[in-house]
Amino acid sequence: MSDHKLHVLIVDDELPARQRIEDLLAKDRRIEIVGSAATGDEAVEMINRLRPDLVFLDVQMPGKTGFEVVDAIGAEHLPATIFVTAFDQFALKAFAVAAIDYLLKPFDDERFAQALQRARKAIELEQVEQITKRLLDFLHEKPPQFLERISVESRGQTRIVPVSRIDYITASGPYAELHAGDKTFAVRERMQTLEEQLDPSVFFRIHRSAIVRLDRIDTLLHRPGGDYAVRLKDGTELDLSRARRDELAQRLGIK
Image (tube, rainbow, N blue to C red; front, side, top):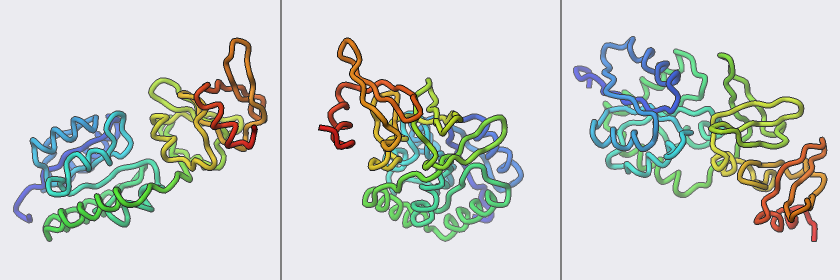
């Protein structure tokens, strides 16, 4: 490996994130960037076609997620992979156990160098397939841990929003808006992905465009025309899907 350039593929749906990794890799003459992908489907196609030695793989992407890319490729064909995530829950609970390494956004140059060195060592020692099989076993056998914090990037800064502060979440185009008290934070994530990563004993998806913290609900409303809504303790009213009304009532102990 010492005389062979490391062929690297970068996968992230956000251009600035891809450029950040490219800039860091450009400092190492032993590395050749063979491509970059913005979606999971592109990642699968490029991994199969280019056979890179190493992939930097974003976890949260629209369409096919990083986990689904791993499944699609399989242990016997997946290159050495460094996961990149804004959700430390996954990084600390899963990747540290089963992956070659992970990068928690925002990461600094030193942490990036550590992850790259660890991946290079795994490749040199031909440990990649063994590590990948362990990762696949972990993903298939263990349920994901629930989120405790969500990283939110805005105007060049990253804020950490504790999930315990979130009252409700609403969809806004490609973004989800986290409502915490009088503050609103936009995060580029699908509602379904957030729903799967939040504790179902604490949060409930009342509508395709809204997830609510159960203990924030004050009243179930029956609107004229047969529509439903919920009123939160701060007075906010949100649409409630008819299909989810009975389940929500049951969760709240309402007959």
